[in-house]
Length: 374
Ligand code: 3YP
Ligand code: ZN
Image (cartoon, rainbow, N blue to C red):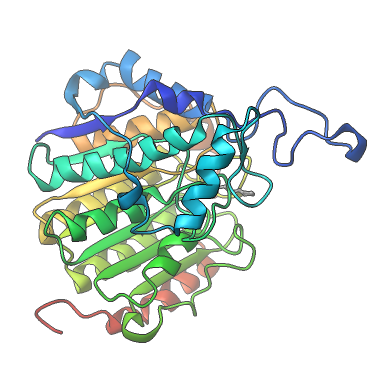
């Protein structure tokens, strides 16, 4: 068993500015602040815990590279790539596209390194250099659409890796599971009419993007049935997440039988996150990780690649990431120091309204065909 791991120091140099969600603007009442909510220190702290805990000694370091323009434009329009490149040359940088996603000078190359790192980890797994892998990239990617960035995302790292796997690595059918607490709208849109890519998003109901990620969004044309949204009600803990994993995520992967599983791994369902209202602990992330590992074992020769998305608690994200990668690697090096607090708070038992939502999603899984049943 070997697990790939990737982080690059320059991911910690992504400059998100001195606003928190909106740019600093004293006249509008937006006081400057030292840290944007998506400041990269949260992910850097996760990397440092992976090192200091000794988990790093159980992992195989994979080296990333910048994605090429050709690789990025498998997903994004040339106009989007050109705009990011041009704003990236400006002394004060620019914005990914929605006005709340600022970036500093030079961000193009950091974002290209994020996308290229997702590609590099996917190559390492598909070529059998490692069994599975975790690419701790920054900035995130899962909201980015072909023509624009959105929600702190510049390029859609996971979608770019998926297109690369199909174009270059000989993979025909793959699944993208997105457990970031916000909707995986990017992959949903990019692969909407494509039945060769199953997209499953587990997120908080209508959290972000606004009104996105409803159960009824199920893919279009030939892709109908191959997009699965699980819009969890606010206040879901480990029990609700476990029920969603065993009732929808595992069975959807069993129905589809992908050759490769990619995960958009956000830790913002965590119980201390400022940008959502879920209660998940390391127990929940461990359950999610086991669920995709077991499915990849059954259908994909274990080929599983996790790519970092959101997560905004500088205190808890490092433990969530540690537990996730420990699970991938089959080792335990350090207990979750926060679990005695957040794990004992209540809210972790499956509630009837949570069960009802998950059961409603599960009624649609019969539309997913695997190669043998197609
Ligand atoms: C963008 C503005 C409000 C919520 C925020 C979501 C960013 C994120 O973590 N997406 O996965
Ligand atoms: Zn998120």
